[in-house]
Image 1 (tube, rainbow, N blue to C red):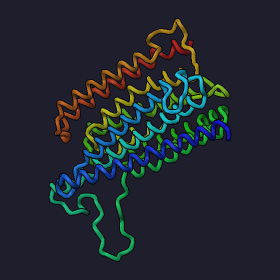
Image 2: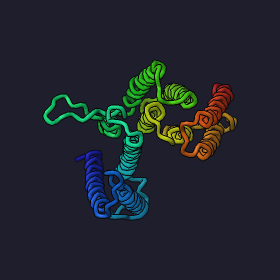
Image 3: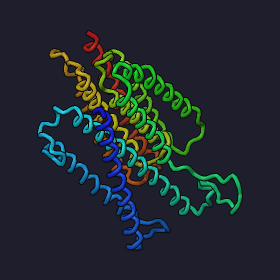
Image 4: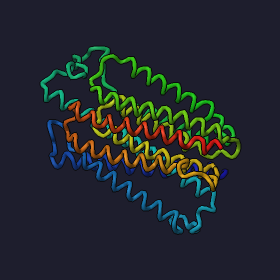
Length: 365
C-alpha cells in the first residue's frame, strides 16, 4: 500500500471518529434540551448542542496541536514537517475542518432565517400560505410541496467541493490541476456569477428597501470584479508542475458563492458584516496563495502595491459596519438608517477601486 493510500485511510478514520463524536454530541444536546424543558412556542432551546460542539472542536484542535507539535500518539518525531505523509495528513485535516465549519455556519444561518420567518408569521397572525410557507396537505394527498432546507442545499454543494478536492489530491498531477482550475473552475464560476447578477437585475419586486439593494449591488459587483482579478492572477502567475494552490483557489470560489448567497438571498442582520469579513480575508488568502506558489515579491515594490492597503481598508470598513449595526439596533426596516450603511459601502468600493488603480502601474512595471 502506497503512502497516499495510507494517509487517505488515516484521514477517513479520523473523519469517522469525529463524525461519531459529533453524533453523540447531537444526541446528548437533544436529551439535555428536552430534560430541561426549555421549550419556546414548540421549539427546543438549541444552545446545548452548540456548546457541546464547541467543546468537541476545542478538544479536536488541542489533540491535533499536541499530535503534531510533540511525539503524540503515533510516536512521531517533533520535526513532523519533514515527513510528507504527516504534512499531507495535517493539510487535509485542516481542509476538512474548514469545510465543516463553513457547513456549520450555513446550517446556523439557515435555521436562524427559518425560525425568524416562522416567528414573524405567527406575530402577524398570518396563515402558512400568507407567510410564504406551503399549506399543509391532507393525509394521503399526492404532490405535497415541502420546503427544502437552505443548509441542506448548501451542504449538497459542499459535498461536490470535497469530492473535487479529493480528485485533485488522489489522482490529478499538478499540471492538470492547474488546467482544471484555470479552464473549468474560474470560467464556470464567472459564468454563474453573471447569471446571478442578471437574475438579481431581473427581479422587479423585492421585500428589501432601496438602500439595502444598493448595498447588495455594490458588494456583489465588487466581489465579482475581484473574482475576475483572481482568474487573471492565476493566469499571469502560470502553473504547470509548480502549481500547488488548488485548495486555496477552490476555497476562494466557494467563499465567493457563499457570501453572494448571503447577500442576495437572505435578510440576515449580519450579512453585510460577514461580507466585509470576507473582503478582509481576501488579501490574506492572496498572501497565502503567493506563499504556497513561491511567488517572490520584488524588494523595491511600493507599499501601495502590496496587500496591506486593502487589508487595512477592509478592517476600517468592518469596524464602521459594526458601528452602523449598533446605530440601527434591531430597527432594520428604517430606510434612513440603512442609507447610512449604503453611503459607507459606496465610499468603501470607491476607495478600493482607487487603490487598485494605484497598484496597477507598480505591478505592471
